[in-house]
Image (cartoon, rainbow, N blue to C red; front, top):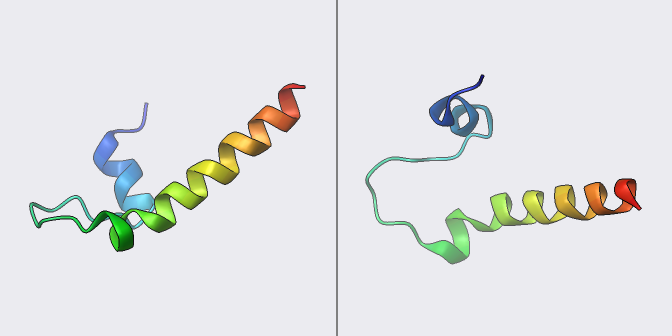
Length: 45
């Protein structure tokens, strides 16, 4: 089982205690997750 910190390090996602600007910091992650979910949905149907 991969830890949450390991996944964040792998994705190069900063989980430090800085304030997150959702528009810039989370955009690459949300785009990647959207692509993943769309791909999984297409695969499942």
